[in-house]
Amino acid sequence: MTEVRDYDPNAYQRPSVAVDLVLLGIRDGRLAVLLVERDAPPFAGRRALPGGFVGIDETLDAAAARVLRDKAGIATAHLEQLYTFGAVARDPRMRIISVAYLALLDETAFAAALDAMPGLIAATITVPWAGEAGGAVDIATSKGPVQLAFDHADIVALAVLRLRGKLDYSDVGFAFLPERFTLRQLQDVHEAVLGVALNKPAFRRRMLDRGWLTATGEREGGTSFRPAELYRFRRP
Image 1 (tube, rainbow, N blue to C red):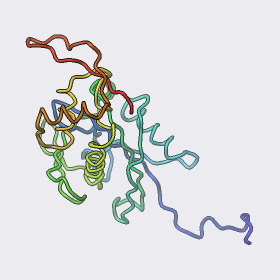
Image 2 (image 1 turned 90 degrees about the vertical axis):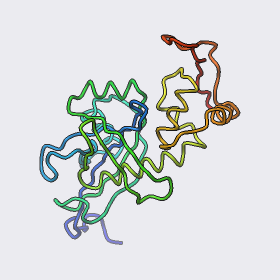
Image 3 (image 1 turned 180 degrees about the vertical axis):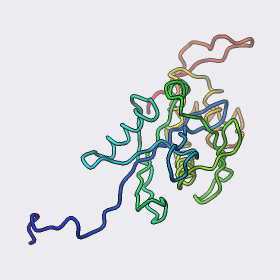
Image 4 (image 1 turned 120 degrees about the horizontal axis):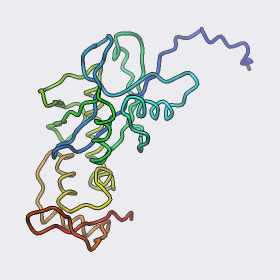
């Protein structure tokens, strides 16, 4: 067996590794993602996902947490590895492999990030397909459509596809909601993620039948009509 001391680390080319964060929230009834503007080539001036290179002594999770803090102004959030993107020509500078992370933010956390980091912008996502990956994804700010740098549009599209696939059988949708919420708010989340309108009675019956909701006995405030009942998520 070859001794480690005999190994030549320069015998093979070594690609760089980066992390990119897909930070999703619901904004004005639409699925939205947090973006930054690139200030250096390549793609200077284009919008991109918050990201950065992984340090030589840094784990992937630590790098993702650092980018979350430094570029999104978020101290902590549940980050889940989404996918590894390694197309040879995905970055014109050199061979860079990116590990994408996904985080779902409630309305308060999403707004706080925008307030904390002036360079961040929220862009709405329209994914007009419900099947396999590879379809078009439309991303737009208040000023109109934007074209993302690198392969970041593909990363966003895969994140939405993964989210849609988990929405109906897991508790993932509750991550977008405050601790207490109405059934209308829950339906709004599902409609924003799926991009379709849902039948109100059928949706509410399905949610209540799952046993995931606990009525708080309270009702929402500040409404000019009959206030809706507030629920909490109960982990099965």
